Image 1 (cartoon, rainbow, N blue to C red):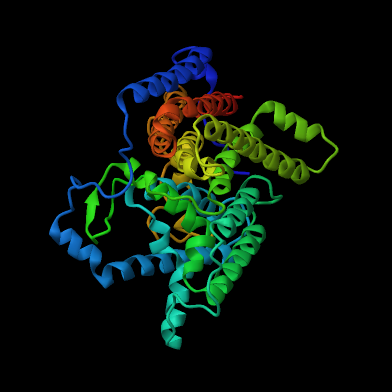
Image 2: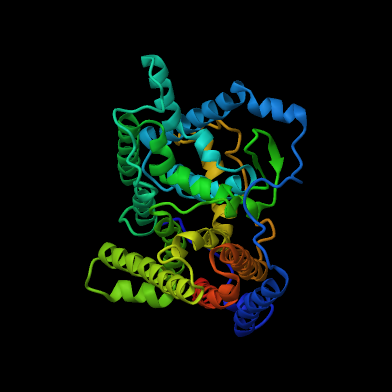
Length: 438
């Protein structure tokens, strides 16, 4: 398959790999001590009174109905163009469909959401088709045949996200058009059927790409405030505003665990094991994916249970309250793991998108593009990978500390955070070992 994810290895680091591991652990420890000494009250979450609003002209443009329709039409056009290659293109290596789906779309959602917020909610062609159908029928798109059950939370999106990562990482022939087309057809039918039954709120809870983009988009530097203005903000305020919901913890763990499994699946030891095993590779891969996610979840549940007990929190609340701190960690792993894939394979895909039917056409004017390295030296990539993983863990530590101050009594706040610090260190060390396993 086309998806080989990195060019950096542990031998490419400018310092010994053991020193990188120790340095990462020390960075978390120093952050923990500094936060305990200097950060005594919860500070994150909600609208900051000092946030600067965007200029009035930009506010007016972003509030206009036409602005929303620009995004919706762009999403429909992009989806239609993608379907040209998916439905009518040749099922061969120079078809851009797999690259557009797995690289430009899935990986590209991260930088887009980090910059502009939950972009897939605005671009989602299925949401737009549902809206147009409701307008044609004279129905309120928010109303379905029955109300959305209050306890559904993010469980449907969690199932959809697992289905996608299984497709991306495990499914046989996953880069072929029939497999991609069948998965997308099932996704579209189930999502639209849910929207018909439960209304447009179904997308907020069940569309894995909307929920994924929404989680990452909480780290965006600007957002619409409660008073309707779009303002600059501390990105951690947006993430701290994420409140617990059913399935949310499992959702972020699936995101983190699947990326860790992707790293593990590229390790020579795992590759040899799969090749030498008499068990079919999809079965081995599925078991490996489930086991890694289960281990990540078990470590998280154990640490948060201890944190809640030592911190004297209300029973059963800690895991959900701290789940938002995992998101920047997962984002750090995604950036580290997929950076070179997005940069290099993304260029190749854009060049191929100019001729999705392989007829010699140049519809987008990109057919003659030459893939550029753009400074992706092995040493540079390896250093970036370690850096973004450590930054993600430090941000997670800050979020967990701030929430712990609100969750635990003052006398036990620091003690309750010790299991969370150990969890962060374990995630960091294991993540780096998996990422640089080659």
